[in-house]
Length: 64
Image 1 (cartoon, helix red, strand yellow):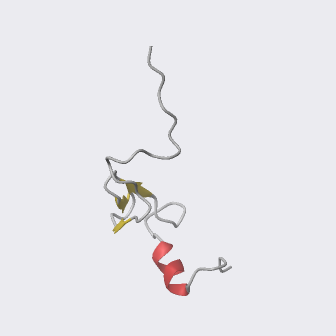
Image 2 (cartoon, rainbow, N blue to C red):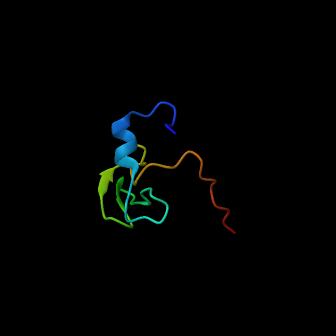
Image 3 (cartoon, one colour):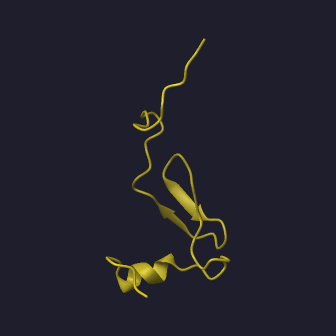
């Protein structure tokens, strides 16, 4: 079954034969670089926040 909006190439890249689920499991660093914990494939994630920017969904911590 084809997921809506994905090309055949995107579906093929999403598969990971080493994973128990058949999909990559991305470990993403603060710099936006990620790797699959099962096969080691790496890629850059465009949605990663720069390290010095405040994350818009993070709640400020209370001190005191």
